Image 1 (spheres, helix red, strand yellow):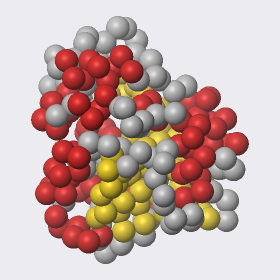
Image 2: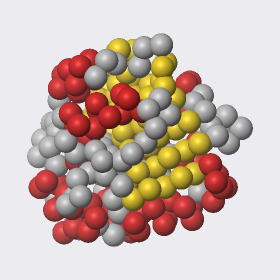
Image 3: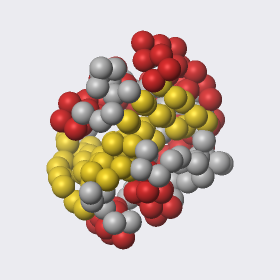
Image 4: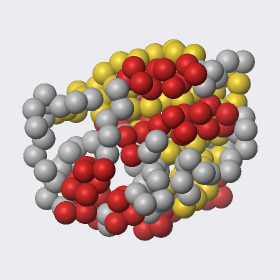
Length: 209
């Protein structure tokens, strides 16, 4: 998310109401995708881009994952995530930072998760940085929103409508080109239907060992 991101103006309660079952119903499928990645890849170090209020972090097993870093520009979201996932203790590090400018160690993560995040940033800059942050053999797992079958109804929240006006869907082919340019190798790609004619494209890319 860029520094002027409209997400900074969306209260946590409105974000969760919009993303939950009464709205776009995206929280549950995103959490399920992250849970599957954690189960299958068992990362010791996890990076969550656009961590928001911490959706999906309930699947983190502290016996396996020793460090979780979450980036977001909305301080209120980070406060909610901290409170909600206190069981992770010092393993959970939350930073109010722009992913395109964050100063993270090269090779510092085994898994980077970008769930409906690249639509709200300049993907070329972020993917290149994430590729450097991954350890050899580390994975980038991303979920992209695909064009809906019909025109989705506008959110009932004015703050979220501002986000919708600013977002840009990232075609899977564009992400594939960016990931390849950054030196990542494709491993998996599939689609997830989330109701109301909406679909997610999920893909995993790996930094070569």
